[in-house]
Image (cartoon, rainbow, N blue to C red; front, top):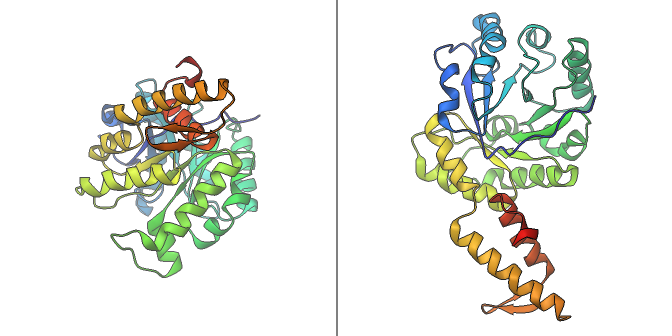
Length: 289
């Protein structure tokens, strides 16, 4: 069975699976997607309780505006098999698998999902190690994978580097995974901002990530959701300019001109395509403008 493609995910909000007080409140955030996290946010001694919460509470947040996912522990860990057997719900939007590095690992995930009657669930692959980033193009080609996210903190820990405010140390990795996503035609979600009180950084990184080609942003606190949504939604000024540009470009093309002078700038087909993408991201059909 071919998994369904991902919906628009400008924001993907994580919550610990052990926090049964927080999970029912997740849709209030306005996030496009929410993740019940059985991995990093769930302590080792509470893995069983986390997966129990994940399967029991997932229905309480479904159908309320956010697509619901569960993040399992990585294949090869002592918790993966039980997470798949006992922690997933059939109506999830997909399953998030962290620390993906090999096609064999993805095959193991796909077999486990099929054996547990969850073969219809697509995988959002966590690319958060040097090997995962290096082999991103191959990993994103896997038929069970419907998207991915880049995990900067684990990546830098694996690389032996240092995180900085500039993000220069992860620019190559971010560019690599988002390019791999484009080749595979699968969306990639950008890294977290660990300091959830730093709204300026969240806003800046969201705009930066959109410019790089990411589809959305990982969020670890509800306050980050609106900032991510805003960063990945074209502004009114962008939309208006795109509409004007396409109107002028279409007139030029109809007159047999492949490149036009638009408000002091040269516009040809690549720039027209960027304008179409802006309208599509704003929910506007370029063919109707």
